[in-house]
Amino acid sequence: MQSQRSRKRPSTVLYRSLIGALIAAGLVGCTADPVEAIFPQGEQGAAELFTGKAWNYGLVGNDSIFTTLVGNVYFEPGARSNWHTHPAGQILIITDGVGYHQIEGRPIEVIRKGDVVKCPPNVRHWHGASADVGLQQLYIVPNTERGIVNWEGPVSDAEYTNQ
Ligand code: MN
Image (cartoon, rainbow, N blue to C red; front, side):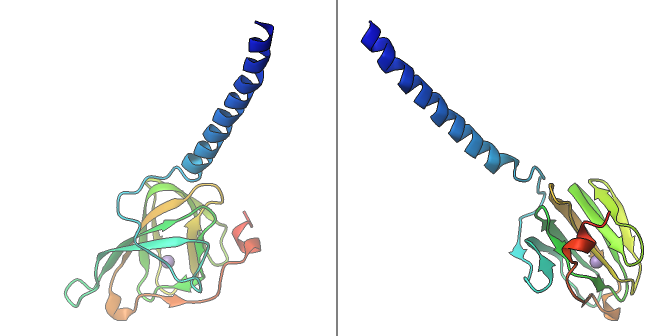
């Protein structure tokens, strides 16, 4: 009896630790980013245009009849675009998560699921995810005959955290 119990105890402890470790590992995987996707993740944005990982999935291609570009970007937590302008402006529709949008010279705006943001033409701005939760955003770029986007430099960590 005594020897059975003493054999049992360490193995129970070991078993519980193992389960605990598996749960912890599982939780890390599941809670990394709770945002839900409507569209496929798409292609990863170029490292020279985004800090962190952003994924673009095109929904409406640009053409001469609609002259409108529509797509979805998923920003992983901490990811953001470079500073940029849109010659004819841009509309963002946030479908999940939490992120930031900043027009140069103004405070960072927190954007969440259900928010609609208009970025006026030729205004320097950036957008991206919050540090802890990703962002799913639909973008609409109208009047593409005037241009789509002019990219500038990265948003520094100091700019990103200046809230
Ligand atoms: Mn933009």
